[in-house]
Amino acid sequence: GDAPAPGSALVPLSGTPVSDLTRLPPAVAQALDTMRSEFERFDLEYRSALNQVESRLEVLQDEFTHLHDYNPIEHIATRVKSAQSILRKATARGLTFDLDALRTEITDIAGARVVVSFSADVYRVFELFTAQPDIELLQVKDYIAEPKANGYRSLHCIVHVPVHFSTGVKLVVVEVQFRTSAMDFWASLEHKINYKFDGDIPPHIVTELTAAADVANELDARMEHLHRQVRM
Ligand code: GTP
Ligand code: MG
Image 1 (cartoon, rainbow, N blue to C red):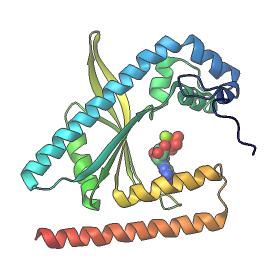
Image 2: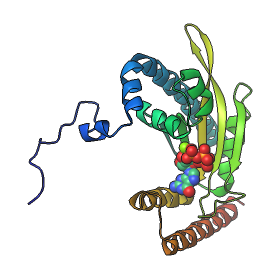
Image 3: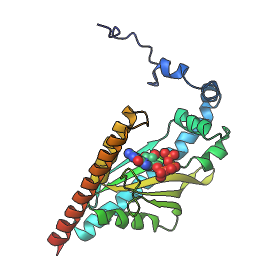
Image 4: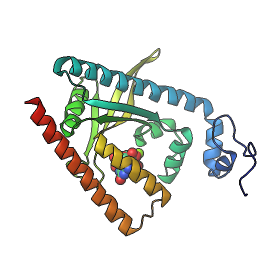
């Protein structure tokens, strides 16, 4: 067939296929090379901030389980945006590749996603986390109170997390998304479908996705109702 022979694709150890590297805008490719060590430091800061977020959420989770005999968090996922994605986003927004500018302008370099069990847990866990005195809440976007037109639901916030380095405390920007399993299920699959169409989804698919989001929302409402009954 037409399949390439095994091992014929040039894949460097970083995992980025060479074909992708050659398609990078020249300015991005150059910055990736000349700013390598700055980006390593950058990555360390954001990873450390995410460790803070994750560990604080785990403490709250353990305490909540201890107090209420029930664990509201299904799972927590974190990721640091790759240097390549940061530079692509910066290019798309017309930003200069200045690290301090990138730090303030790109607020989703560090991302955490907290998937909770029941609808009420979204706000419960959000409140517990953001009530911590050294967590500074910079922005909240409540896509549960006001879902996106396509039906997307989640509670997003952007926070400053203090990280103690040898040089002192650094306030690192982290985006945290809180959602139920049903919201997460819908968002993951919508993302995959969206990806297939490269952002250009046919209207009837959008309509069906929105209808599916309503089903997910209905499921959350039912489970929340059941949960309240069994806890009485
Ligand atoms: P970005 O530039 O994409 O980060 O958007 P934004 O700055 O307007 O932020 P927003 O809070 O709207 O969305 C940030 C993140 O939420 C995205 O990167 C996704 O992870 C998630 N998200 C937002 N809208 C959707 C959506 O319609 N579908 C899915 N699957 N995820 C979404
Ligand atoms: Mg984003």
